[in-house]
Length: 141
Image 1 (cartoon, one colour):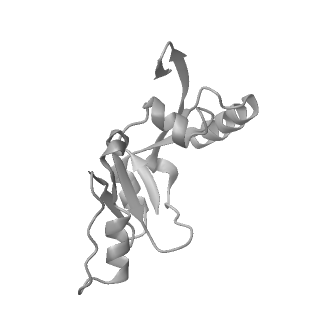
Image 2 (cartoon, rainbow, N blue to C red):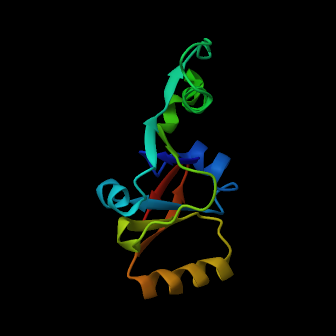
């Protein structure tokens, strides 16, 4: 399972998921990503609700039940606008890096990591954008 968001510039997500602004966010072309992933990979849009999903025994197998449960979150997380990718256990590779459109670097990423990532992204021909912070807002240059 892997999580994706429709947005890259939400301060709370940078604080929660990018180690307090010291991580990265990878931007993808969804069309190219889907073309470059194995056929058994699926995406599900997260469902946000005040109540947990009801699990009923029946004809639905454990895999489908797990996917249903893992596709729900409390409505308090709605701002994430999340999609979940489901695949077989193990590493999932995409066949080409052309599906990566940009890498966003957090404001507090270390100089060493910033340089290392910059060099790698330049070699791969992938755009990078660096975060700036003005008062309570973030922007990318």
